[in-house]
Amino acid sequence: MIRRGPARTPFLAAVQPACAALRQPAVLGPVRAASYYEVVDGHKRDRKALDAAREAVKGKGDGVISKADTKAILATLVDGQGVTAAEFGTAFVILRDFKFTAPAKKLFIQELALAQPQA
Image (tube, rainbow, N blue to C red):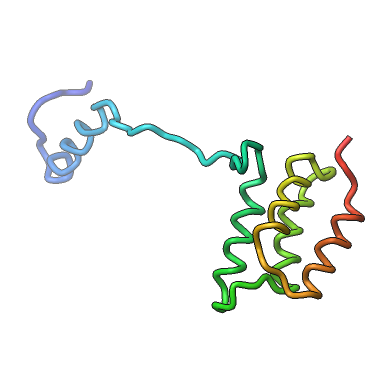
């Protein structure tokens, strides 16, 4: 038989306020997950790839994407069964808006040329 009323042990006295708080409905703010896409020039672009490019230029302070950074960006673009139109568009936005070292730019273009479009 469960008795409700004043707690008879120190443990129950400590636990009862916590249990009362658990009975109250949770107050949550609006939950909004980050979108997979980011709109650039009115078109959907891959947010992960754009963020990877932004992180790459933040790096050592030179503001140029290196060959190693290019591999990280390509990994976010070629992450599924194939490369979608949005991912190809993202690659062109990255080429247009970010500075690359010459070998990094060459690698980026070569790898995109080999990427299989998603059917």
